[in-house]
Amino acid sequence: MIKKIITLLFIILTICSGCSDLSNDRIPLTSVRIEVTLAQQQKSEYWANVPATFVTFLKPNIPYGFPYTISATTGYGGVLQVCGFDNELFAYDLSCPFEHNPNIRIAIDDITLNAVCRECGSTYDVFYGSGAPIDGPSAANGYALRKYNITYISSTGSYMIIN
Image (cartoon, rainbow, N blue to C red; front, side):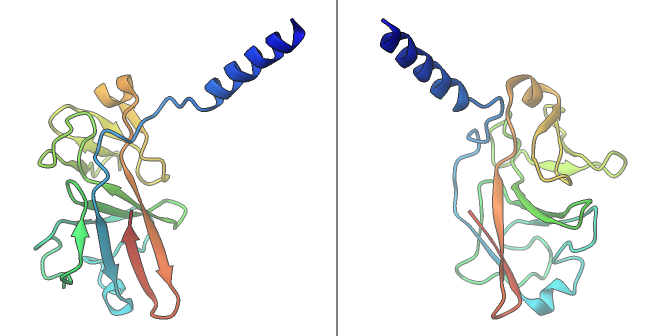
């Protein structure tokens, strides 16, 4: 009997520890590959490297003049790259997870410095690195922004945004 109770408790703890209040699975896992060279990092329109700044990537022409390679891909709805308040780099898909449409994208509000969906009104934290919803229907449903990885390539001084 004690063995059954211990087994049941173990199963319940395993299930509970795997649960999360937030989901970033609303945005399909789509290929992301953006390389930003050392020279491109010097241009603020191509790379956010000062706290509370951002750049959006959407192939073929955002940011204007960015030299996308033939292998470059920009995710489901585009990529938002930010330099956080603590000088860390983060990247997210631009699509609003509540709207679930690659053409409905978040934008940075100049006053609050939160990402906002102008369609549904959801707001998200991006400069602290969570991508978590703050308000709106995404917060009510637990839909977070899809995050992408930023990798530094020391041999070339480049950064690569990938998933």
